[in-house]
Every structure is written in C-alpha cells, then in structure tokens.
Amino acid sequence: MGFIETIADTLKASTQRAPETAGDDGSTGAYWCDGCSERIRDVAVDDRGLDVDDEGTPRCPSCGEPMRFERTAGSGCAC
Ligand SMILES: [Zn+2]
Image (cartoon, rainbow, N blue to C red; front, side, top):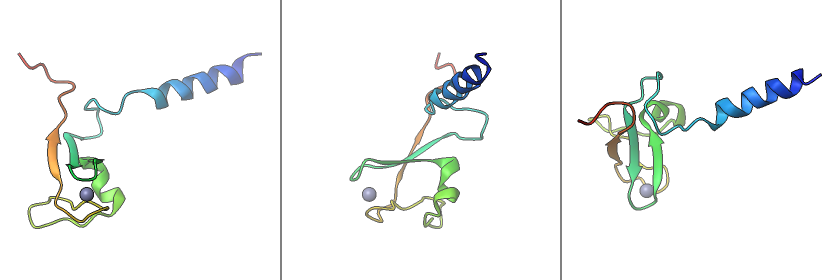
C-alpha cells in the first residue's frame, strides 16, 4: 500500500518548508535580540505572549531588552 507513507511524506515536506521567506501568514519580518540571538517572527509575538512597549516593540523573553525588527528579505524582488 504506500498510502500512509505518501501522507507521511507530504506532512514531512510541508514542515520542512523554510520559515524564513515571507509567506501568506501576514509576516513581514522578525524581531531579534542581538544579545541572546533570540529570534521571534512578528506574527508569533502574540502567540509567545511577549511584553510589548508603546511602539509595539516586543521585549526579549530572555533578557527583557527591546528587540530589533528585521524585515524578511524573502519574496519581494530587490531590483
Ligand atoms: Zn535578549
């Protein structure tokens, strides 16, 4: 049969897709903490329950410093 295997392969393939590129989940980039090398996508800030300052900048869950936003270079053409 190979049917189950096919499903497993499909699932594996979908989870292996690179999360770095801007997808259709509304993500435009990620927040970084330079000190801890923490990286949290903008769309994941709410999920992680991070503290956010008045400007919407989340604080690093490890050290509490404001994080630096970095746009995803991915999908758009840079020319
Ligand atoms: Zn940190």
